[in-house]
Image 1 (cartoon, rainbow, N blue to C red):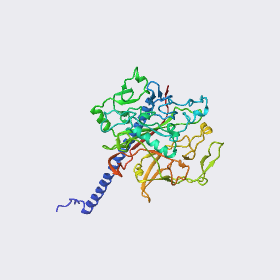
Image 2 (image 1 turned 180 degrees about the vertical axis):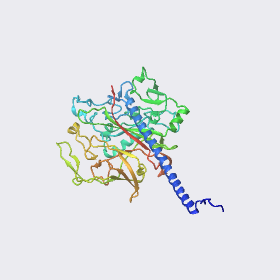
Image 3 (image 1 turned 135 degrees about the horizontal axis):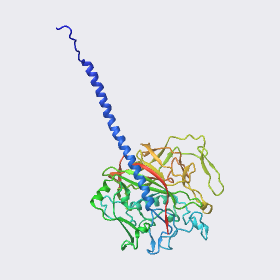
Image 4 (image 1 turned 90 degrees about the vertical axis):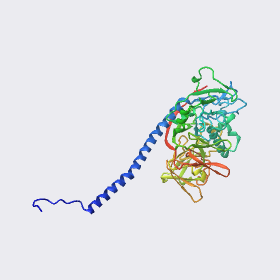
Length: 481
């Protein structure tokens, strides 16, 4: 051995093993974080796309939807389906000629018999105040097929039937008929005025055909029809090309909107509405469910809201325990105010049956279809029972409830857990066991498979909520003669 040469030592086996363990642990951490980061990125893209789609929906509605003062068309000799927006009507679809009662404009009560402006005109507060605003339906199996606004087999007609059935359970009388719903088929007062292609996002270019006339004898409109976009019996797309059809079917993002009149107070603007647009995403190969007039399950590209009711809620607020009623001058009903010492919970728990529970996966939302009656001037003349509302009393508010979780309960149904927003259901009876007078709108998850139970088809809903974003806007709709 030569003197003066330093000995070089290598890593020991133990050191190599420790280094490998540290390296492996680091790789595991990176591997676990990568999917989380990708999911976060997808969620951010979905939120941004959803918000853009919701704002796009509001722009389309504000630009295209019109109100009409008299829905009876003298030329056609029947109701003319001018606009999507429901307004209480008088008369029937045949005779005498139906129309809106006089009055209803800001600071206007120009009627010979003042009471007629309330039960028969736009100052009437309908029970179902929040309603969907749907475009013409898209048939996923044949997107080039024209869908008439008058026929019964459309999502618009399905929604109207749900409103009729729900109101009929609560108000078992024919007196409310044209003050509470629009009708379907030849009985329809209104029909969709928005083209179906507008329901998907990003927008898909398409060609429109506007027609008026009867179902058997369609007529081309005279004059510059585009100057009168509200005069539409049918709004149909020209036969779609294969490329257009593919774009629509592949467009996973679509929207649905809801509307409500801002106020029914005396002197309020009957054309001022709040519109809520909900953007959704459906997985590839999935569609949104609805039923035709014979209860056959159908599918749609754009969401179709369902009107449902819960069985109960917890906590169920009790008068004089959780809130107090403050008397107001006759005939106004008492105001409901939460007690200062009421401990507001972080969540509310709604109970429902087995079939309804599948409509509320975590992340979904629902909108109450009713809210407190303002008890404006018409209450002085035609007082009526209020069936549902909120604590605190909020006639001009529309809270939206977000589902944070759901779980099976002891009765075999579901417990739907929602984030508290400070508004609690109020009904005539006990909200702990009966919320049938407090219906809500929910967007059901998309489905791909279906099952038959008791001779009826049911969708096998996706376990994930389709909701991406919600946008709200106050719009004063243009009214035409």
